[in-house]
Length: 201
Image (cartoon, rainbow, N blue to C red; front, side, top):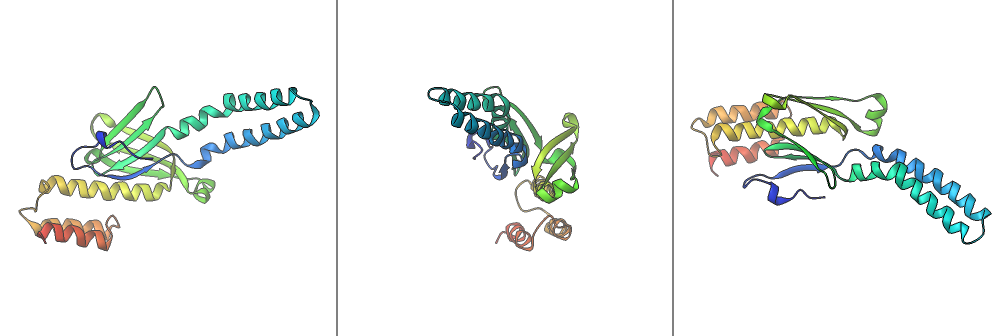
């Protein structure tokens, strides 16, 4: 799964791209198992060509009951770039939501006990301006996603303040980078990379 490069701005990079957690496919899987069992019993009890009719009927019922959820999962993408968060849904009729990172004011996540065991949950993005509040459901590793959004937002805000160039006050920028590292939004390696870039080395 790749995000179309034509939809990215000149200096924009994709940091994360993923589909909803696989648990959304469980109903489709259960329907497949049930219908396969019923079709198997029907095929064993029937003579040709009714065996093929039973198998084809089971496949058609599965498509009607579960195929839509599989397609919805396949054509849903969550994307985190160096500039924004993008949610894309749909195969023919598409919908999309884009939230610039600099407008994100808060990232919240919630998990039940079962969701924590299966490593998925819901994420709420609170943003300034007209974006308001966006709810993202069935996110794999929501705590990790929260961390990644905060880290990307911190680097984006730093980029805005420096205009993409070394800042007039490198000490202030280094302090900001150190703060991001202390809060866990930057690793030591990322801190050193940004520091060397700031110092022009």
